[in-house]
Length: 505
Image (cartoon, rainbow, N blue to C red):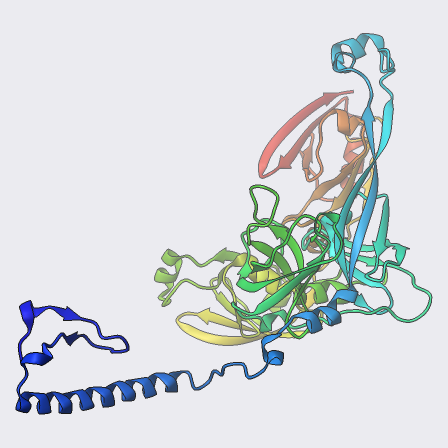
């Protein structure tokens, strides 16, 4: 047997490389030996093939056309009737004058009516569209707050093309959710059941249903790309589901649906440089939707549980200093006296690792987890304390309103006339999205054209002192503003900075 120049060739079907043999130069003994070797080679290949087929034992080739014709249509048929189109109309005021006649110099000397077009406001109608989801047979609809923001009229169009006027029950800035109500005479509406969004896993199939670009109800498919995305910058309690199901303008407020036809999220935002879908969409988890719907009081205000503790995300350096194996959780740095956390025994320096068994990735994720609970729930926190992990049970309560907010519109001849002020409390801070540990008197509204507006006070300003006297409550502020002094020396706090304004009578 001779190997010419050690050349080798791959034999089709073999898992090894066989030499090219010159059969004409083999003797009888060599030929017999080759037959035995060939028989052993075939046996080995059959054994390898058998092992390969064993690895695919859990999968089967479709046996008929019915197994090939798989479809999402049963899921769509179950969920789509509960997804609605939302059309809004807003009256926008614009000026018809030329830019020259809007110049402040000319208006100062010739008045607001100067110019050939009189400069009077002109009203025009602005239309927008979005989507929503019916979550209750009595006509309760969930959508995004930004879909109906500022709308004068809201029209809901059902999947069967019926149209209804909708009223806004509640809006929540911190989750970008809004609750609408339509009145339907007759049979209950088809609604969608909410699924536990904590059951989702990365890689699960999902469908997005909505009204992109106003073309009508549209269904797209994809997978769950990621969970607990908190750095999106939409709302203060965001912890989004990320999906590659196509989401486009008009899909906002629509449904993200699991393969059993239940709601797992409300489509809210996309990452895009062109305005179209790039395969990165975000949805508000259904657990947050459930918390907002069930947390509504009879007056339409949203009641949330409040932990009464806050802190910072545990970084690598913090975890190393505490002796933790890896960075995780939130290091408690502030406790509200008498709050839920303090009453349960949480201490400053504790690290909150998980809420009801769900790990907490950062401070934003902690706020989201607490917001999905209900007032009165008993919650179990997993806490790292001095190299030990302990469980702490907490009964969730609402944020306290101490002191009472005492909302007051200031009037009279004084600098803050036209401003609406209130006493800050944890409850008011929760509503406004502010710091619940701040105290004092805060400006919550300013009427245009008033003294407060002309002097450029802003919503969110804290009024700290007047004429070197500290301001503690709204009542005290009113007395200081209407005193007999000939001037007002006002100190305010704005975005953490102290500013001073002096006004003479």
